[in-house]
Image (cartoon, rainbow, N blue to C red; front, side, top):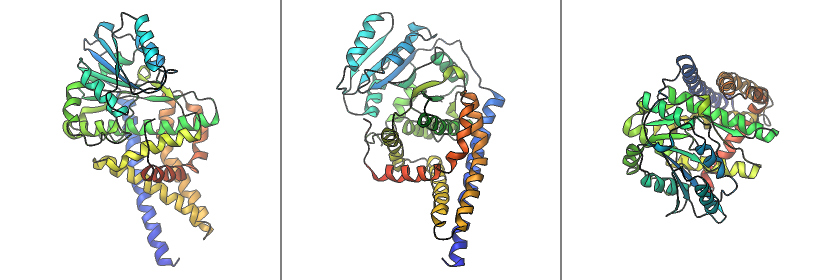
Length: 376
């Protein structure tokens, strides 16, 4: 490689490094801003809430969210729960029906999916819901007792159209589970930081709330219903377009942390990540697209430096330096979110994983874009 070409490549890498520093630095400012200013809350509301859950082959897990909802501090007279069985081939419906029988004072409705896939199931439940505020979670989640109370109070007090909430993977015992949790916490931190600065670019369908009429309105403009993934982010994208970024915010509250399952093995882990990545081809928000491109191109550049080391050994040193720089950029936001989630001990894995993360990002991105994925 001649010096001129090498100089051009290094300048490109430096540009994407600068953009990455700016991006993560902005998200870090956002999340620290949440903790310094606090969230405006109103824990006493009379709003009525519909909780929507799409379930497919979840007979082993569906009781987790159902029992969690039965234990909510929120007034049960103002609560409606809609479970959509998305063509399950196991005993999911039987488990739900037995729960309904044992809890006659809880308003739970079980419906069969009219279409196929989580996105269609959530949409069907949305159209069946009769209350003003919609909350969504997954069929394998555990919900804290004040989840509804805290989320609705935050939404009403801040006059929001959509609320994003914290999600923690569980369990976190094995090394594989620990690195999953740490990686996922980095995504939650970026989600919170971005929403705080009125630039929402990510969300998690395991913990969201939104205005029902607003959701029905923006659904008319969605063109993503045939995509396997993205029941959450495409809806958020439309909310941001139609009601503005200020209509969306993140609730950083320990009483709102939803726990969901970590992946049991590498195969299921990468299947999930490819499914997440596959939806990027349909993004229309420039904020989401630019953020995704910056993260991809920076990690591609760092991975390229390592590969370049096999041709010019000096690149191995440059790769190490850029990895150290990335760790220094990521450290403040990781430290903040791990502290909030009581997972600070995971920080000991943060630096070693920085050497792996660029290759993981590149692999999942390209495999997700070019492979066919499905929900389950």
